[in-house]
Length: 444
Image (cartoon, rainbow, N blue to C red; front, side, top):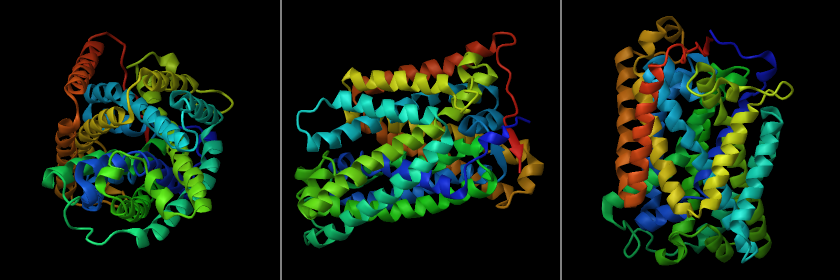
């Protein structure tokens, strides 16, 4: 079984919680709230509650897997170990699209900067923050995790200030027309699907398995606790964001519009810097930390050139993978795609990946029966398989509602990429001695 070096096992339960909360909040509440409000109006509160429950269900297979073994390749280990070679290759190719998340977060940061500095070159600002965070992660996950503690503490204080001051400004008739249940139940589901990428962020802690001191205990704990914290904060913030102004005024807008109205100016400045900007920095910091492990393991298995999975001898960081992500995300930033286009594509691909993982994890009790039997959270096999099937169904349902929000060009582009992802592993497997799936896990 694959081993991770002693020096890499540095993340504690507190580190994981900070990374999870920072990753989820930054990627969702600051980036996607305005888009979701534009789809469903003030019923975004219902969308968020529904999304939180459904996403937690779809994440439970990963919760059980994380409580059973240390997965050095994170999500990719799940796909390859339980789904088989082809599933592993399919997942590896689709997974690369997570660089859209880095581009989305960097551009969202620049959008908030433009509220302070009208006319600023948003693409340049986005590239700058991406560069700084990639450099920080090249110095090692331990440095990035320490920075995350400070960022997340200030972020939570800023968001709670927004909610606390804003509740008194929410207009009466919150659940009345106009502005309630825009586009009916379909709009509620579409908004829930839009927010699903953010809420799924807690499950990404699985990708830190290689660096955790006690992954089978701490990763499941971080998934559950961060999900609860984030759900409460999301609902409070969205209640204010959608209830102060008419929907037309805040649809597809950042939280800066509402914050300027409800907060005293000194607190507005605090919110913009330590809430909006810090949340997006924390999200990008966490994403750059967890996104690399599956790609590194896929390189080591031979799906991509093995040299690309090399780690820096001093900092134990996958420098080539980080630099590739940097180049791809940078290309998206300068391409001219707007935040909504990027968010829709990212959400769709993310839920495609989640569907694959849930299907692969159905086989866990049969692939590692001894380890599963010893799991702290072991349940009946039939109940576990039912949860996996439910998780796959939920993610597939989100994919359906996200397709509705995509443009014709985006649908064609996504279909072409999925077709390539389906063909690539089949072709690669025909090449003799090219792909060798390593056992990238350790029993607790």
